[in-house]
Image 1: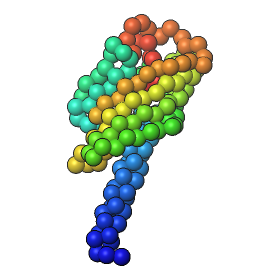
Image 2 (image 1 turned 180 degrees about the vertical axis):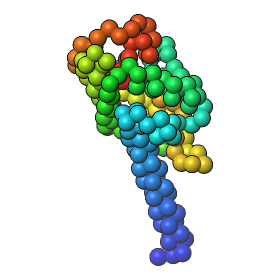
Image 3 (image 1 turned 90 degrees about the horizontal axis):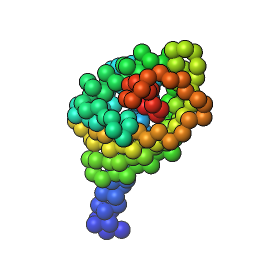
Image 4 (image 1 turned 90 degrees about the vertical axis):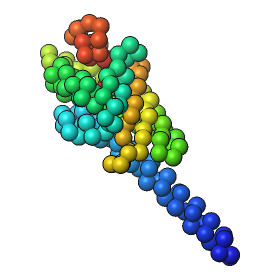
Length: 166
């Protein structure tokens, strides 16, 4: 084996390792979003976003900036007794310090009147590597289905209609 092929192998190995580490960090980020939201941990929830992130919760409603995003999830905490998110089937497309992801989500929610709703959808994410690691720069939540009827808890906005997923 020549020194050129050894060096190429080392470079390829380093690139593969970097890819695996990035994919693992992004998977953890997706899980931290769920844990932060479900456990009502504002700091944990806020830590997954870039400062200027966008969270699109419905085709006509989005929150810009981590403070607005946190205010929206805090509204949900007031509207729901419990939320439980499960994510699966994450597909990640890495491109240097940026990545895109698509992940399925199932959500079970208990409303203030004690009733439960189950639904699901998909998150379409943009991620960026920052000085503190990978973060979500944009999340588009598409609500695809409900398995249970939901009570009428308001009208018009995601904060008002408690749309799933969140």
